[in-house]
Image (cartoon, rainbow, N blue to C red; front, side, top):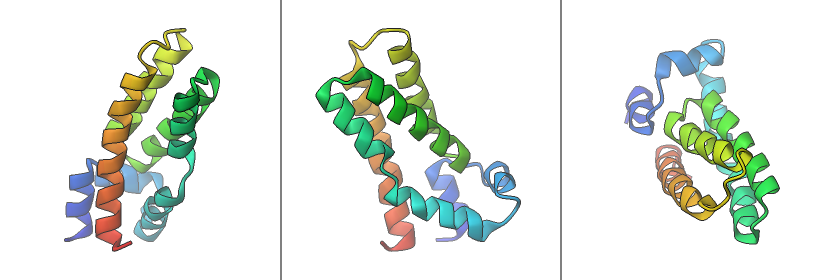
Length: 118
């Protein structure tokens, strides 16, 4: 699979995202690979399981930013919705919102692992 095909499957706008990395594909790939080691999703999961809305909001906010920078639009959007809801004081759907984030996160991680053969 070509890099452009991989990005398309991930839902990443190649031109826009590559621009964020100064047009340096190697840097973009390094950052995509490093996403596999990022702890924000794990932190979010733990916070949701513990019912800690403040920690969950922080982790989701960081995840949102990271995904936005990497062009992972859907995961960024889901994380942003989570953050907005929690910030508004509505924690009643934290588990439900986290389920949506989890599905997209697993899809993204699966594609990354497959492409980079990790």
